[in-house]
Length: 529
Image (tube, rainbow, N blue to C red; front, side, top):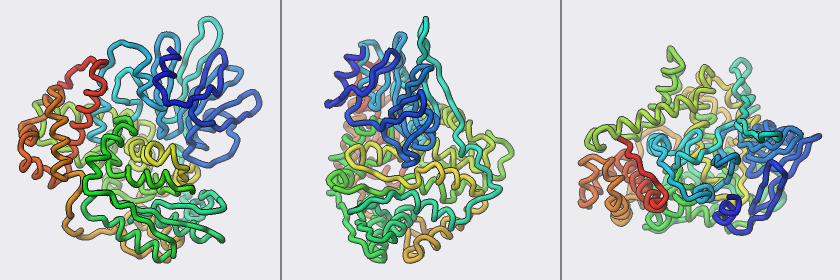
């Protein structure tokens, strides 16, 4: 079966490791480390961290990396402590096969595969699959802070191991001052001679990182911005103002009017049909690929430090179950529940599957004072992280200062009450980026202008969604009369885009139909309801 795995994998694989219990192939050269009797390989670390881990738990938490470790007890395959890395597994016979890509695991045998409806429910409700979910029931995503250990002997056996990252014990008794958090973050931006790019949006994360990077002696910073296809393009407007205030060159990637139509299927494939995010990002990603410089990205900052509408209600919740439900509802506000959107029972089934999975995945955060912050890191950020890992990377070198274990732990020590009105983050901006702290931001409250045309809602883009759904009777069976009518009525279809709910459903249903079409020869389709 290893031959089938290799033949379905990307070209250019080299054997990195082979021993009686494990084999590893890679298209790049993983980092190698050793500590006593242990030696290991790690790949795609989100955090800089110490150069030499001393255990798989250390590599998972301090480097936020996936990897393979060999020691006197056997071989260990591990993911990172937040489950952000795309590491998928499939047990067959007495072996466990793994891959960063799902397709090679699909090709391991010729037997039928099944739809994981919980994964597809969360793709819509959470905008990404969560926990151990992938689109296929037989293929699992390795969960946060988890490993599989193979041991020798007769018979050989596999067992799962887990640990609790240090940030789960973060208490609010001694929270860092905003100035301390800024200093910590500045220290986590790598030092590199020569040009460095930064992805500059209209929000706070990237402007803070840009200001910290520019302040370094001899810095050569250039800013890159693109349209997020929201019809407002405030990111472009605000980023230009920030770049001018910081005195850095500013480049804007302007996608064409039909860029979403032209690019979305490639985005879906690169992210392996696992998130509804980033449909706008491919032109920007290709521009980053051409850079001969690392790119600083603000991923995780927003989730770690901003306040959210559900925080006060969670703080008042009378039980952990109630707290989780509040946060799940806050994260699923775009999910339409109107009966006419869904076939009988479909909407309720999707909601039940999503809430059940959310409860299970966020269970480690139960009782934590910053539960809603952790809940977002453990769920939605898996999809958000696919931009630096699967769109910007692996072609580009991406730096993620917020994805540092000390930054994460420090942020989780900040009480929810200290975040109210964004007070804590605003104090960070005032200390770390005073020249741009008060400039207009996409985080500012207040009325927004009426949105203009969006690429994802152009007539041609909507027609493409409708066509793919119309060609799949299995997917059409999930939809109610309101959305079924849009498949043949362009005017009605356009009216559905005036709020995000029906548009999300059309995009989700189109992705499901495309995925089903791509794998139909292998799928044993069991209806949702």
